[in-house]
Image 1 (cartoon, one colour):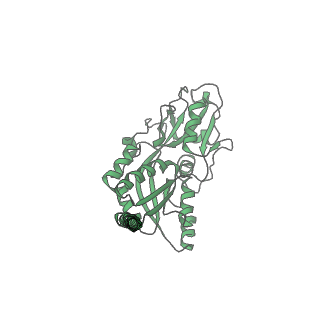
Image 2 (cartoon, rainbow, N blue to C red; image 1 turned 60 degrees about the vertical axis):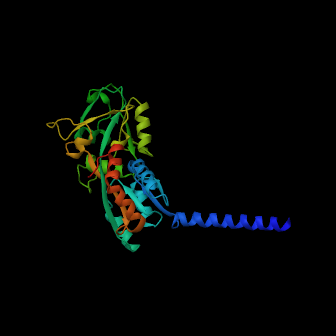
Image 3 (cartoon, rainbow, N blue to C red; image 1 turned 90 degrees about the horizontal axis):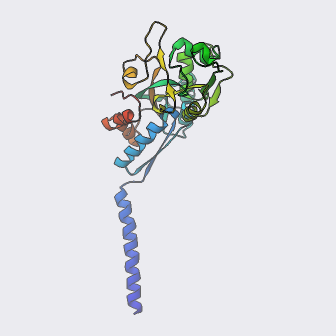
Length: 290
């Protein structure tokens, strides 16, 4: 009897270790982790890319977090992420910081985006020129009645300074494309921590005006049509108008890596450029580059 118990125990141990061994062999190789950090505009897009990529490569664990383009680029420079998502190009000071760490940025343009200006649905204002947007966000136009709206003060909503969307809007709208311009947002602008926060405030504040990426458009806010100048037509931000550059506030979206991507990181970037990856760009309300 004792002998049979010992034999049974031995068999169970053998089966246990055999099962463990088979689990290891099925995995083939150790799980690979990829950390992606950066643009709040791109965070939802990055998460869908990661989910679909993981279905094809179950041994690769991909974590995607936001925080702003500047935060992602800083994390890449400091070696705490593998890929930085950014809604702006890297700056000279960041290139210098990277070189001091011994690496060079590799830039991949993976999608196109439009920056939309939004107001509360009850606001009768529906069209603005680029100059009017500029004057609003610099604080020179302070009441909606100047623009055909109600006699109410304008509440300005902006992203925080580490946001690529903030930087792009400042350079492209306030400074009219001049990176070294001195124009700044009004000191009275409310700096919001995310595009989602702007969307929520615009949906609930009848006097608010804010901006965010195309992917955040919702029926809970009214999207403003924008004209390049008073003689140009007002254009709504749509996939087609961003692709043909008729909508005046559009930009590329980037992935940055430490040098040319290799191994698992290259596989992920290749997936982003694939038909499936670019279909995800469309499904998440951005504009594919392919």
